[in-house]
Image 1 (spheres, helix red, strand yellow):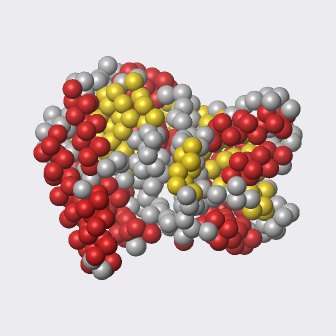
Image 2 (cartoon, helix red, strand yellow):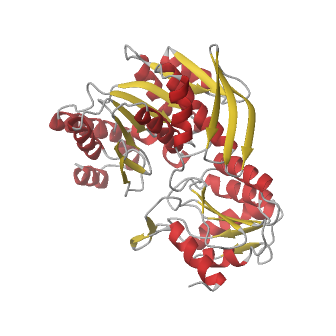
Image 3 (cartoon, one colour):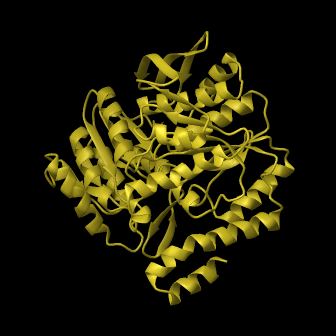
Length: 435
């Protein structure tokens, strides 16, 4: 089907193809639903969407339901599977093709899955990849600048995500969970018809007494007459929001306070999400998948607060993706980081040096000076090695952004194996002489 779509694309004008392409995706989804026998029918499906935090929120909900005794499946950017049998995701996409989606759903059905947590992107919704999936609960993390290369405008991006809540609004038991501190919350809640909200500054499920530390966060939340004490092991204020979304889902599904508290606390980490690397070095090393302006702002502001010494920020920007965010992210990194190291990040067939120059414009706007506290090193392994040499003392932090869990890096000649954590460890051991 994809080869047929490619052939059609080659002979039809670009403008016309863009208009008819969604219908081709719809036809494809209908076909694979029929082939695999509409496997998601009978499952309770929770869709998690938003610009940032989808994966972590999905893992939190999955852990909570699994530990509460439900047969629960998970499909995210990072991994997929049932219960504790989770397989790493090998593709550079969150919601997989309609064929692979339906194939995996059929496998889940054979295993007797009751609940499915499905991380759902704006692309998948706009392209009807999830057609036929009976979403019962929709969760919104937040909506900020992202994927404008595909959607064209921020309004279209918002509208694409709203489709998830419209699907839930048509389900007899449909329910929405929205971030009250996000400006788009009311629009999504209205589309779902029945909804609750969560947040730190507002919301029906509202956190209080929030304490964010380098190793995680704690807060209190009142559900009805019951006060819950939540401990989240994944650092960052943004993960307070992610865990609040999971709490709100747990409340809606009727889980006990103990099941909600234990479920959140039992999730120790998510690959590529605020992972710390320790090989005996005196400084801190963190890996995170952050790759949008909003995620940079949230994450780097938190890391800046917890870094007593120098903060070194390393990242790049993907080729053939949203160009408008590059300078913005450069400026944010320049604002919070003492030093910024720019490098490749799935450049694909785009000139990597051109991408770095676009990011550098933003960093220079924030006051960074090339070859003094702003460094452009295209080769990512070399850049990581260099970044480690810039942090020497206890209290310093090196943070590697953009690749996170991904197992390949895309260059002009195709995909190459990649292990961000492995490269970080290699660089540290070389620096400390413990090879």
